[in-house]
Length: 166
Image (cartoon, rainbow, N blue to C red; front, side, top):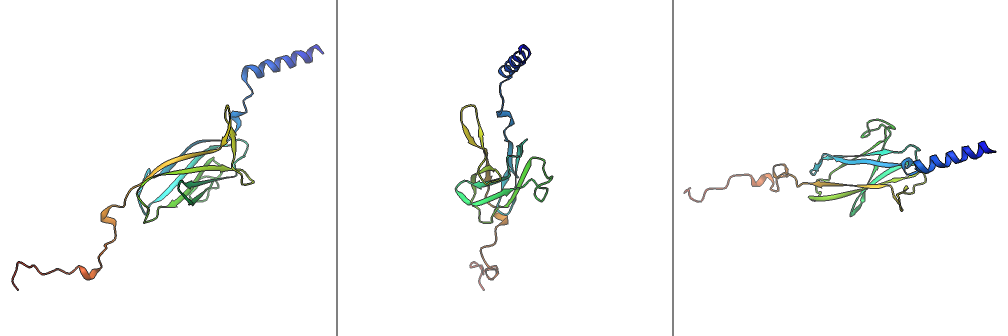
């Protein structure tokens, strides 16, 4: 009996000294980014999320552009383009920047989901929150030399110079 009590007391001391750290075992987004950093209409944006998920809680990751919820992107970690290596914890998506994309700054909201399609919640020290992150990115206006000529070819002919008599 004394041995059981001693082992129990020792385990209690270890738990008290080290803490019951379940926070460290939760899935966590380590970093996220968009390449290239500055986009132009017609570019392809590659979006990546580095995820640590020891217990495979996360089944899917989606991103939405704030204010443009119809622009929803599915991230992959299956080795199929644009993802490089299956199961490496780096989830990837790509998107074509539309030719008529307005210039400006945008926010991509990235959220992790479980196998039932529910957003994954994680505990913080004092609350619960969704497993999500944001990426700020910018779209610049297309350079003038790349814009289509707004005038058709029929207007390319030279006009007569009014200072020269004909």
